[in-house]
Length: 474
Image 1 (tube, rainbow, N blue to C red):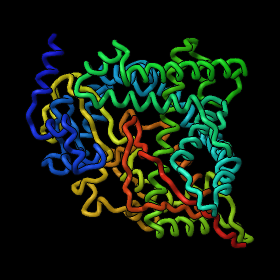
Image 2: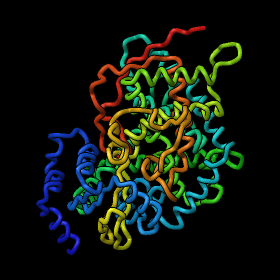
Image 3: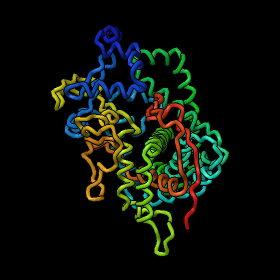
Image 4: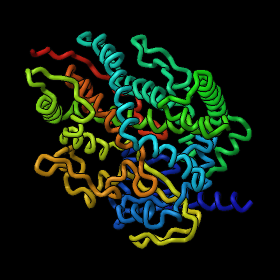
C-alpha cells in the first residue's frame, strides 16, 4: 500500500519537467529523450536535475560522476530496482549484479581480456570476419545503387565476432544471403522491451503487466524464452565439442561453473557487451564520417603512412601498427564522445548522500550519470562541444587521453569497461578495411539520428548507405 501511495504522489507532481515527461510534450521540440535531458542539464546551474516521477537524479557533472563511480563507489551499486528491471533478461550476469558475484565474473573476464595473446586472438577473429564476409558483402552491392543498411551489417558482424570469440561458435549472420537469426531477433526484442521497463513512471506498471501476462510483458516473456532456449543450445554445443584447450570465454567459465542457469546469464551479458555497443559505435562513426570527408581523408593518409610497405604497396594494418595510428584513435574517441553506445547508466543510493555540487541524494534514489549529455556540455567540452573535431584529442600529432570522469563512455573507476581496448581494435579494423577499399555515402545526410528505445543507442530505421568500390591504385 505504501508503494502505491508513493506512486500516486509522484504522478501528482505538477512541476514542468514531470508534466513534460508524463505527457511526452517534450517530443514537440526534441526527436530523442536523450536530447531533451541534455537540454535540461545544460540549463541547470549545477548540471544536475531530478525527475520526480521517476525518482531519478540525473547528472552531467564530471565531479559528481567521479563521486559516484570512485569516491563513494560502495554507496552506489546497481541496486535491486535495476536488477529487477533487467533481471528476466540478464539474470545474474556481470552487468546486473553487485558484490561477490560481480567480483567473481569481473576477475574471470579480466584475466582473459587483459592477456595480450587473447587480444591478438580476438584481432585474428575480427580480421577473418572482415576478409571472408564483410568485404565480400560490400563488394556485392558496390556500384549498384542498392541501398544497404550499414547498422544491420555492423550488428551482424559484431554478433558473429562475439559468438566466435566468447563461445567458440559461428552463427554466420553476415553470410552473403544475410540469413535471419532467431537468436539475434529474440535478443533484440528482449533488450528493447527490458529497456522500456526503465522508462515507466513506476515499476508497478510493468510488474502488473507481467503478472497478468499482457502487452509488452507478454512479448518479453516469449522473447526471453527463445533467448533461454538458444543460449542453452549454445552451452550444450560447447560442452559436446569439449573445452579444455579452447580460447573462448565460455569455456573458461564452464571449467569452474556447473550451473547452466548461471552460464546462460553470462552468455547473455557478453552478447550485450560485445555485440550492440560495437555496432552502435560503428554506425554513428560512419554517419559522422559521411559529413566530414576531411576526417576520412586524414585517416586514409595516416593508414598509407603507417602501413605502406617498402615496395610502396599498401598492406593490411597489423595489431601493432594500429597502435601508431593516433588520428584514427582520436577520430573514434571523438565520435564516441558525441554518440556513446550507452547513453546513460544508473545506480541506486544505499544511504543518504550529498554530491559535490551540493545535490542531496536520499537513500534509495536512482542516480544516473549521462555520457551522451556530458559530451554536449559547453561547460565540460567548451564552445565547440557540438562539433566533430578529432583534433581536440591530439597534441603534437599524438593522442592524449581525457579524464575518464569527464569522458565516461567506458564507465570509470572499479566498473570501467574491461573490453574497451578490444572494442576499439575491432572498430579500427572495420574502419580501415572499409575506407581503404570503399566510399560509403549516406543519401540523406541532413537527417540526424533518431534513437530507438533500447539498452544501447540503435538508430531508428538503421543507416541506409550507398557503397562504391574505390579504384585500385598500384
